[in-house]
Length: 180
Image (cartoon, rainbow, N blue to C red; front, side, top):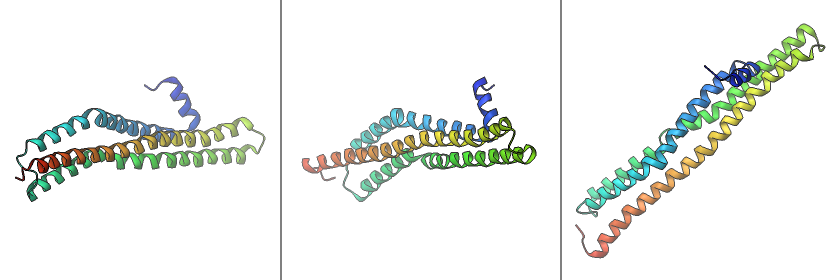
């Protein structure tokens, strides 16, 4: 099921790497979903909202402003979807790595207790179990951190852009003298 290199890596790093792997799979699934949303779905949604706003007969009433505000709020909510879960997974991955460090050090101490300091090979296995999960958790977290930051910026930028586009249509109406 898993590639041989991954099975070997998990074998050297200990059972905690299964948790890191699960968190990484979930994190990257969410990242891919957000990439798809920001580069495929959100531009289409922006055009649809802009067209709906243009088709409205008036833009100045209290009701029109509330509709615009509602659309912007929904747009923001869709842009920020899953970002909190991505942030949680980013925080959890190093903690899972730390758990792997602790379990690996326990293995090292067990070897020391049983054999003393003479069995370097057995100690190396425990040290591997202590360092690999930490490295894996940090690598997953760092890669996720980049995308979380990118998605936050994209969401805010696209919301500002939509706000400006809807405001510019409102301004065009004001300049043309149609005050609904």
